[in-house]
Length: 564
Image (cartoon, rainbow, N blue to C red; front, side, top):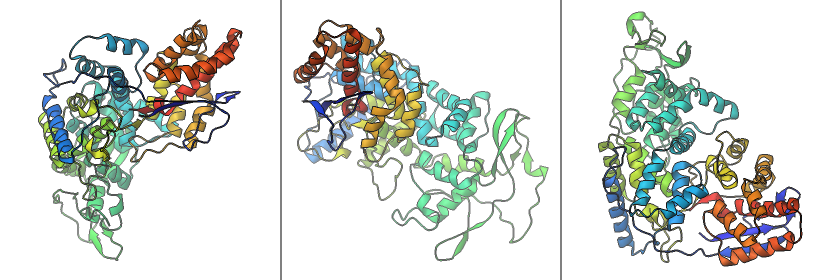
């Protein structure tokens, strides 16, 4: 990454930052560095972790297949990332934040020959991992929510999602619990929320289920067969709708539930040419489930004989022919896209783009960059018992994950994964990292995180775009500004910098705390010139103001807001 930092005209409320179009106001100092690289130890995926997770086969497949791609394309990949680059990247990907100064130092001082793998295991066993992956999958599965809905999710969906990652529940079991929506224990109750929040809208459910569990988008097949990915038909859209159109939100003494009718839900769909067809129980790359259809205009009679009681008397009765159950047992179970979709999504989260890109459009228009790799990883994932943590571990331990982010000469295609792709931080990652940089601790409910969700809602964007609005937000948001002011206390970053006698020591601490690296000499000199001209013979309050400006400039740099 081309690291650059801009210190810009001091404003009453700290600092403005330079926009991506290089429009600056009162530019005082511009510093650019070509951050040096040192040889980094290679990591192999030997053995099994303390949690009993085997990932050796996953890592071996990745290293072999990607290396073969380099050879075929005559590419020399980037050098391995340094230890200080690795630990920042790992913490952002797994813990959802930058490391504290203490965590960074502990890793760098660790002399173990397998320390990268050991720290991967340490973080995968942490509550930070649980929070970060729950944050990400909340958005990927449910979409960004209003602040009111976030509160509802915290009461229902969020505890379930956190327990999925805490207990490393198999992904096929998770999908079954979510789509069947018949909890067998209080711990599973939150799984109902995926369907429940969509408020009896079977089309919204179908449009969410397809990308979430099968990696395809079927929205375009509502009125006609997909115009581009012609293998996705209109019958697949309406067939998926039919599996859920008998379900209805129900409030019970045990909490939110979905009841299901044993009758109804028979209709026809029409294409743009006026032809109509029955919406049969079918889906993409799946069979059609037989269900007797009533004669036209025949009235169906609902009766108790069509149901069986639920195991818990508080739960709704269950149809003897349950469409949701048929979907889970005969469509979801063993579907050829199911494991591939999850593997591709995790790959995109950790590597910057999917083997199929975009990660949720796994159709004929978007072929995989390496079909054998995707197939092999999916098979390993299934053979592992759909072990989420094992899949993540296998990717993290691979050589492509641990490459540097400086694109090597002759490498143009990002789908070769010959260098580490830069990725914008999610709102949650950025909010936590701001707090770690300033205070060495983070509050998950800090007001700035909600503001960042509103301003930067995307997770795994197809294309990366940063605009002037982001810069203005970080400049003017009152909650972010308040954090900077609070960091002026003696035990926080700004306060510590202002109390240092030697400005160069303060500059180095600032770079370590925020960017996870030492300042280059040119950077150090430029910042030194900026602060010395303003620190001379000034009282502490004015010294604090100067360091607030310097900290603000580094915090709002592209280097801080990206994982690289």
